[in-house]
Length: 496
Image 1 (tube, helix red, strand yellow):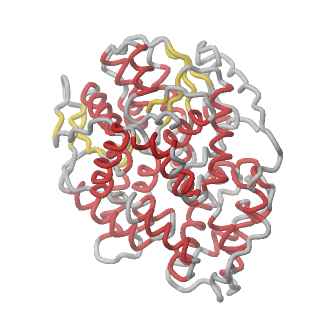
Image 2: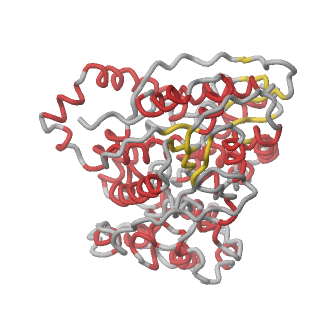
């Protein structure tokens, strides 16, 4: 498989962008069928549950969208679960067949629900599809039906309750920072590991513990950051849940870069979660509540654009018009107006062009496309142009760039084994570039790939796109950038 040709790859050696793109390095792919295939595709042994009848009338999947699929198979090489297992029902067109059955009134048994659950929602199939099938809308509507009407086994319900009672709630995450940071600083984690206590945790909780990044100070962002020089725009910043709690340095770098590029930055208080995790998991009413709160927070901010530095959040905000389409009153209009203002940080900076000078950073960079930035938002070339604008930066393209890293919101918590296999696949792709720094645009990708690299004994500096720009604008030495990206806040903890 090859990177998407629309991704504007630069030569591996960092030559002129106008020159011919260098081929991505070969990647050792390992076994054709991943080890998780046995538990994922056969012998499920699940108790009887599912939807005894087809979909109900509450926002069912659109039959016309399902009919757009002509089963051409172009989606297969881009689908992570099909690549892992070679199972037709774990491909986009196989899942669309299940959706068509539900639309025809057929029930979905436990096996069918399992195939739907195992989709990462990465949207690589949307990019690959020549027929323009809107698989993202189909799978989201189907998951809402399943989540609302199917009764899962109690362990599944308990885990999902834990995950969605924590991660979409910034205040709860901030409260969790206190014991987590104390545990990290005191060495209790290492003691627990040496005593074998971590091995006693269920696999999914072990995955959650392993992903927890190194925590540093998290000072509150000012409500207003003035533009440096002539003000070009007034923008609002979405601080995010995981981003704001575990990666506050990314938000701080975002405000500095925006200010240096002539943007006044407003950080609305009380903005809360954008609803991305809830919407992608089928918790549609919860997602609508979160969306309405975000709309209310930003409507009164008086901004020209809303800047997002987490790919999944940006994708969700841009879909608010669809999410709130049946809410009545004035919500569809308000949602559409907010969505029209949303820009990823790379997207906005590329649109307005640079005014702040860049200092050189002599470093080779492997840029990892976050799925909800590249596939859902179509933002591929902009981050690459921004990185190339820094003197000394040389871009390296990943083989299999279109394959998800396995993070996918909460996927690596709910399905840790296939997520681990995909994480290792992406980590090998990053290492194959020979780059000295991995750059990405989503906190989930950052945690997933950095933690996997560390677990493979191949720790590597990882940073957000905006942190590289911030270092170049402020004249931070490349040695310091790399040191912070290897051992600073947000980086994986050493193996206990």
